Every structure is written in C-alpha cells, then in structure tokens.
Length: 323
Ligand code: 173
Image (cartoon, rainbow, N blue to C red):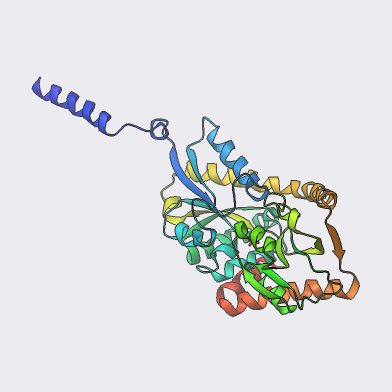
C-alpha cells in the first residue's frame, strides 16, 4: 500500500516537473530546422510548404520545429551547426558552407534535375559524399530551375566586367573575378545596404527573389543569360538521421520527393518574375552570340577550376555524377 502510494506520488511529481510536450504526447519525433535564407521568401517558399505539409499531417511520425532564418543563425555558420548536430536540419546552399565542404558549391553546376539524379542513382552517390564530408543526410534539392543572374547599375556590352564592383558569395566569386570585376562577399541581408551606399555596383542573385530583398529599388539592369542552377538543399545531421526508424526515414524521403516536384513550377514563376522586374523599371542586357558563349563558358570553367583547386578529390567525384 505504502509502495503504491509512493509510486503514485512519484509519478505525479514527475508529471509536474517534466510536463510532457505535445510533440512527445503524439509520439512524434521533433526535428529542429534552420534556414540560411530569410523566411517567407521565394527561396524558402517550397521548404515552408514541406514543413507545413508534414506538421499538418496527423499521421506524420515527424514534427518539424522550424526555428527561423538568418536572424536565428548567420548563414555562413549553418554548415558547422548541422555537421555538429547543433541543429537537426538546415535549408542551405553550398556557398554558405564552403568553409566546411568546399566542393559542395559544385552542385550548382549540375546538368541534371533532382528527379533525373534520383532516377540515375546519382542522388544516392551524392548522399554518400555529403555523409562522408559533411556528416549529414542529403535529403532534398529545392530551387532547381531558378538560375543565377548578374544584376548591375553599370552598363556592360560584352562579357567583360572591368570596373564593376560586385557583391558575391562563393557562387559567383571566381566567375565575376575572372571577367575582371572587383568582388566583395556579403550575406544576402546586406546586399541592399551595400547598393544603397554605393559600396557595390551590382550583385549576383537568382532570377527569383529580388523583390523579397527590395533589390529592385536599387537595380537598373539584369544581365541575361542566367547561369548555373540555384541549389538549395535540405540536409539532416547524420546522427539524427541515424536515430530515425525506417518509417520515419521513408516518410521524410517521400516528403522530399514531393518537395522536389515543386521545382517544376519554376519555369512559370520565372516568367512572372521577368514581367515584374520589367514593370519595376529594370532593363535587360542580353549578351548575344560570341559574348554570350564566352560568358557561359567562363562561368562554368571558373567555377570548376575553383572547386577543383579547393577540393580536388571530392570535386572530381561530384563532377562524374552531375555532368
Ligand atoms: O547569397 C547568394 O547570392 C547565394 O549564394 C545564393 C545561393 C542560392 C540561391 C540564392 C542566392
């Protein structure tokens, strides 16, 4: 009798001291996620749909606790955070974690869509590389179909960027520098101020998303063609991934494939974005003929040279998969 009372009151105490969270009560595993890009923007849109889809699904074995974007953690710290398990899941581009895995930036050079990579077996090879190099499970590839562009306030009429001072990340640095530009690295959140203060004449960004940052107010020209592929992936810390049941892994993988299917909308979103930029008064500088070819060739060659120089073995493996 005494024992039973004791057990009862201990249980009662335990409940008082350790309130069972709703996540635990539902038997769902919590995954804490951070984004390298500002939330509620074009680049995070499909990831947010993925989080929403999972969290609103009563039968989901997972709950994603989406903590936030750069206000929660500076983008260039994301790589170490997911590698070391400080966060469980991140949405990031390779350029933000070149400090941890220099060759990751090569993914922007893919000739294949995420769907094609999966169908060819290339995705699982990439997953192995990311596991070895980053200690993560490479879960999904978002934003494919959204290319990068040079935006500038200084007119150009050839594939030459002498006299231009441009804001970059590792994505564009070797390319713009090779064409003669002076380059300055900033996080996305600092581009507007850099333009406003005249610290830079232009910047690299994707086709989509300049309105999210207000950059149209500070931009005269977009240079066409676009180059590379925006590569924004979802990665899960390897130890966290290893702790999931096979059902939980399957659920997340199926959700990732759904997330990648949303990339198919990018073609129509790009059309809308072009129209919107033109309505905002931005003009297009369209490189043609030889200049266009030179521009694209330098983009590609400079990027490969950079990743090869920084991390030859890993870059060579990635190249054999994505080219
Ligand atoms: O900050 C950037 O310009 C950058 O590196 C990037 C990467 C992917 C999508 C958009 C921007």
